[in-house]
Length: 221
Length: 357
Image 1 (cartoon, each protein chain N blue to C red):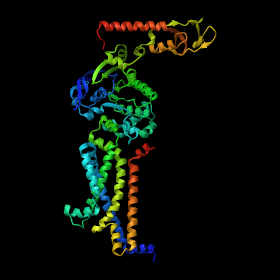
Image 2: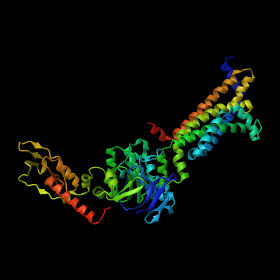
Image 3: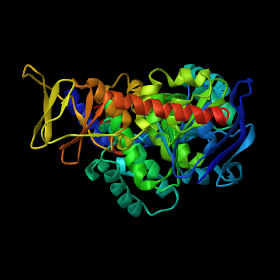
Image 4: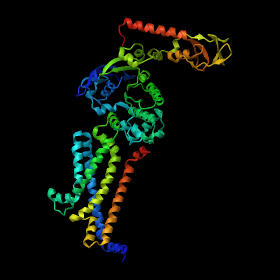
């Protein structure tokens, strides 16, 4: 039986498992990005607005990123008081990693805005909060969304680690193949689906980017 | 809308005095230019009007109301603001840029847009440009959009901070002429900041010259600035050729004009050649035709006449009527007499009344 037939065979028997693994994978990868994205906006704003926040916060994000993901997954239950098999640990860990990436890109995006445009907005009679949402945020989006692409893709790959601490997602297909003595079909399926998910989500962010920043493409010409 | 500075001072925490006890009344419905070298406090003074900067002491009043008593955002919506490089919102179309302040003030977006398209045509753009993004326009066009945006809410006061200094000289000249044309229609109270004394003289009904340390060196109409600078700083800043440049403010209409006769006009051995009444050149005794080097009308300035008199091979500037037909001549000697009389009477007034300004 060729590998291709083995893969099809595996899918016909375990199709339901693979499907739920994909859904679980998406859930574990995307929820942290969304949470981190929302949190990165005020943090990025703080970095740009208050000089003294910049250094400690950005250093912290770099340090956080150097913590091995497996170590963080094993540490978190102790810190959060959750059970080791709780998917919440994975959500928190990936939120921390995504946030470390996104705070930097949000701060960079906000810092890259032409100061005269912000000043003009203030002089037009924008109050600070409304100005932030109407001018600062949209103008930072090209850089912020570039950061979001990196965060989405890296999350999709990192979720696989969760299988090592017994939590679902496509990583489980790898561990299963490993336990079955390097049985290739689940490993291959997990690999292909994982890459495919990353590509599709990345494409979705790019499409969203084109949709919300049509002006940026005009300016680049 | 009269804007009054009352011993307005801005001192920064490091001790730098940007504006030093400024007392100044900006007249209503006219263009007042703040001019001076960089770091003289002219932009700081401008920004204290719309509370982008608050003074450390003293007050700024608009029509006798202290601006400090008003909420900044609301105050600013009643004051148009134009900056260098226009400061347009790159993520909004031109028409939405122009509609900014009306929308902020609660005008329905559709209505604000309709008016914004009209405004674009008013500042010399086309309605079709309204759907583009600012990056798709040239620097001069962006600056026109900046002016349209500042005018959108029809504010009585317009503040312009170095509005034309980022564009090339030809475009700058167009924009200046456009501003004067618009002001002729609108009659706003305009305060314009520039470091370019020539721009100040072209645009200003009144010019405030600022010196280093935020001191007001002189506040006067441009003509007076050129004729009688208050001190050595102003004289130095106003620059060379101020006597000649001052002639821009005198009209040619009052000059005595020698009539052009039907049987032929000869000046310094040159005969004026007319074709159906229009001057075509000067014929010298050897029969060669020399160019006229241009003509002027009664609406031109004394500066134009003086320039033509200098350029003319006969030493006479040719006056024409609206149809371009020669009606008379103004000789160099006549221009020199008029200029001398003018300067003598001005300086005599200065000597009797003490220092001018």
